[in-house]
Amino acid sequence: MRNKRRRAPGLRKRIGLELFARLHADEVAAHELRTLFWECTLRCNLACRHCGSDCRVDPGVPDMPLEDFLRVLDEEVTPHVDPHSVLIIFSGGEVLVRDDLERAGAEVTRRGYSWGMVTNGLALTPERFRSLRNAGLRSISISFDGFPDVHNYIRRNPLSYDRALEAIRLIVREPGLAYDVITCVTGAMVPRLDEFREMLIAEGVKHWRSRSSPWDAPRTTNHYA
Ligand code: SF4
Image 1 (cartoon, rainbow, N blue to C red):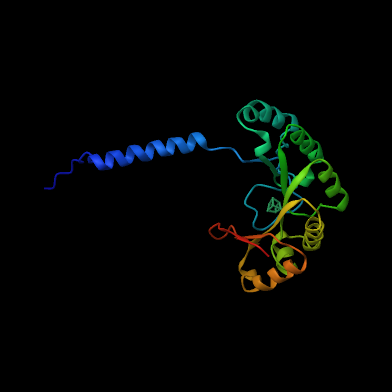
Image 2: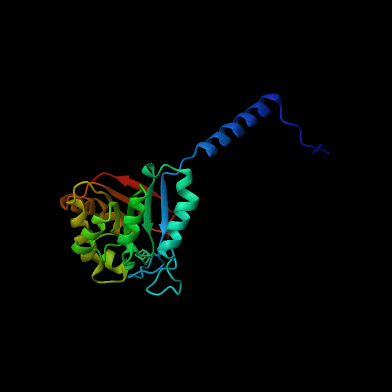
């Protein structure tokens, strides 16, 4: 019968493990916060087929009050970071359903943070966009999943493609705004991705990210259109 007792690791292995443990501890200690996401609502003005969260028009969960978020920021985050090197991203749900988004943006800007948001673009009118910019909006990501037949099917809204495209046209023309267009690629779009990329380029899009649908293994690819 074989002896099943484990042998103690040899000297070289022990040194290697200790070295790894120290490097890992240093890495954890040095890990600096660069991006902070605030999922500020579960409400959404769409009900997409591929939605990975519990977002809906009325999720039955009230939004976190802005004051609560600011208190956490002031007490738990700001003492440990340089706000000027941290980007706060407002995400959801759909952030534009919050009517205090401008106030949230102005408050974090006043504290020295940059801020951005992720949106489906449905409610991004030129007026709302301008008021968000006036509140310090620095970056924006817009979801755009394909040509009208695909996008509107996934998003379950016949207006969603046109609205998202109008929003994209606003942001690509805006000086000093960091942005990207995010495409959740489903099977129907796979053979049309080159054509879609050409369309985005024609619209002036320079930053495009795609990821496979949540039905597949999540994977993100950066493209520069
Ligand atoms: S827009 Fe986003 S949050 Fe809203 S239902 Fe679609 S995937 Fe979910």
